[in-house]
Structure formats: structure tokens, C-alpha cells
Length: 300
Image (cartoon, rainbow, N blue to C red):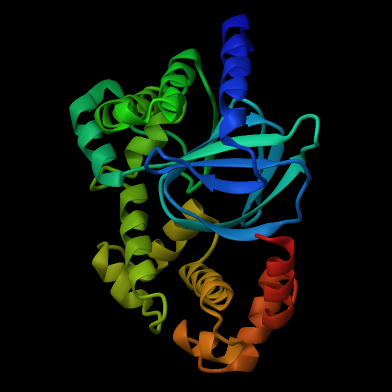
């Protein structure tokens, strides 16, 4: 880590702390920017990662995408070009050195427009693209992030400067270590783009019966080719992806809408509440009722 990046990092942490007084996730006054702080390590928690850029400032986290274990530490970033079910846990945090991170939602349409503007400056990926990748923050990206965070203290500047800074951040991501991976999800004839279209369909119709043949026809692939490509990108089959979508959505509506487990199971597409309960327990580590009580007690 260069001295300049070390200095920038310390300045960022000092700048952010007044805006992160509480434990957990905090939506900021900047659109699409969420701040995270915790002073304790956490258990593995299944979540749906939305398309986003996540930057670690202090602490450490492990993210699990199927069988892949991704270690995410200071000045590394997670790049998530498509929505994907994964799990994560904070592995380093204390009262003295709390875990500090931020997440900026990626606007895929804006990214696609920028890929066109950048043109051939970003090469096509020579490696298998992944739904979650980890890279290292360079001085240019960190500088753009620092100027973005300065808007927390200047709310009146947000409407004018935020769109410009967001575009610069996407630009620097495209020119960075993972730019070719990011670009691949935007190219019409690429594997990443085909899988992103399948994911879009699955998210819209998560509570409907899964028809692999229809998905394959949607992206002009054979059923076997779709299965292989989907698993290469996400680490799971389309059926496993749909199941995790359903279970995460059921957890959300039970937690925030007060719906009982049997009703939630039908709403997300299960025909058998007992099967729902078994699969829910395998994913979240406890039956629905016990899990929701635990989450509420922990204040998540």
C-alpha cells in the first residue's frame, strides 16, 4: 500500500465516522450509497447481493459464492455486476477498530452507456467472468470515492456533483483490474450478458415454475450450455438460484410484513409448507419462526 493511499484511507475513515454513529447498515443522504459499521464479528448470513461496488475501509469480511470463498479486506473492493444470492460474515471488528465499509449501487444502464463511450480501451475478459469478483483500490478510484463522500457534508452539492462522480467511479472501474469482467456483462454476445438476462427473468418470475427450456430459448443457448454457463458465473444452477431467491424473499416478507411462514411459502411459489420449512432451515440455520425471532432480537 503506497503512502498516498494510506493517507487517503485514514482521511476517509476520519471523514466517515461522524456519519456512521450506529451499528449496522445506514442509508446515506447520497442516492444509492449505503454505509456499514459494526464493532463485533458476525455469523454467516445469506443475502442477495444487488449490482454494486463495495469498498472495505477497515476490518475484514468473508463472502461465499457457492464453493468460492472471497476474502475482502481494507482497500479491496467487491464488484457485483448482477444480482446473486451469496453469504457473508464479518471476521475482523472491534470497538477500537470497527468494521467500516460502503456500498454504491451500480446503475446497469448507465454502465452500458459508458462501455460504449469507452469503446476498445477495455479488452474483452480472458478469464471466466464471475457474479462476484474482488479487486484492489487504486489511487484514482480512491480519490473519486473520497470526493463522493465529501458530499455527505455538502448536501446542496449532491444533485449536481453526484451524477458526475458516479460516472467517474464507473469509468475508473472499467479501466481498473476488473474492467474486462465488468465490460463482459454489458456485451450483447457475451456469456456474462446472456446470464444477466437469465437472472433478470428469474427475478421477475421467481415464484413461478422454472422452465429451463424457456430460459435457454430466451438467450439462444441449448439447455446444457445454459446450465454450464449459469453455474460458471454464479456458482449454482438456475434451480438453486431460484430457490435462494424464494427463501430470501420469504424471509423479507415475514420480517417486514409480519406474515406467517405457511402464507409466505405460498407467496414465493412453494406448494408444500413443510418442504419450505426444511429448505429454509438449511439456508438460514433455523426454522422460519425461530430465525425471524432471532433476527428481530439481534436488531438486524
